[in-house]
Image 1 (tube, helix red, strand yellow):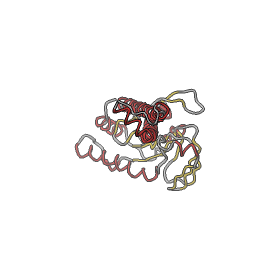
Image 2 (cartoon, rainbow, N blue to C red):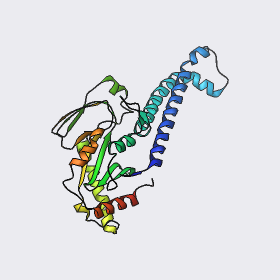
Image 3 (cartoon, rainbow, N blue to C red):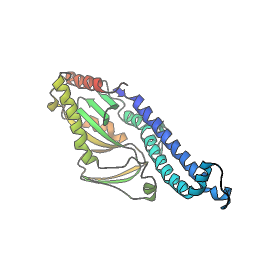
Image 4 (cartoon, helix red, strand yellow):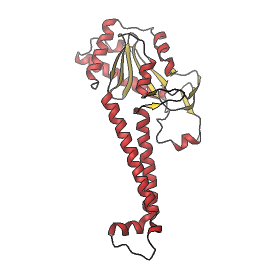
Amino acid sequence: MKVYRNLAAIKSREQRGRRIALAGLLILFVGLLASFTPNWFQSEEQASNALVAFIQRYWTVISFGALAVGFIASNIGSYYINRFAPRRWPGSKRVARPDELVESGLKGFDDKFALFLWGLEDLPYLLVGPLGVRVFLVRSDKGTVTVEGDRWRERFTMGRLLTFLNREGLGNPAREKDEVEQKVRELLQEGESSGALSVNAADIPIESAAVFINPAIQLQIENPSIPVLRVDQLKKYVRTRQDQQLNAGEVRSVTEYLRSISAPA
């Protein structure tokens, strides 16, 4: 399988997350220092330095403000780190990024297949092959997810409440499906119009699937409107859903076109 990965974008987002998380910790530290102000100065003592005097006067505002801002920044940084940084997954000794887990889930396919990882804007996980185009809506959070038709729910826990800012979130992949498939269709139509794609865009099958990569996920599924998979089920899903196929030339044309418009690997 050919893999086209925009590693620069992945590393850039990982670094952004680490910087935001570090900034959040520094802001929290500033708030902590401000909270000690009453112990450092007597109430009747007036600081000669203007900055110190300001802190002395407004230490409660600074302390509580830094707590809120630092907490938010730390969680936003963690959100990026969870999506783009290598980490150890539950029940596994492996340290890997989410995109590496998706690649591993598809390992074994030949060069008729091409996997695009973060190279296409708003389409981070996309597979091209004889089956057409498959868009993977990847989720990395743990917990219990219930799917009933178009309804998606997560079981409420205190941990979910405390980490709501740094979690990727479930959303509703059934609704997201139409949006991402339309984006793929528009990309293909642009390629056909420009002559860069030698295949009729309307004839290229497009399908989406929700893919959960965290081994700690618990899925309760009943008549889902789109395929719902764990990452270890990806290979079987691709192999058993090839009812609509493109020939080798058409697969090559679609792959080369998407590679030409994707960010450099």
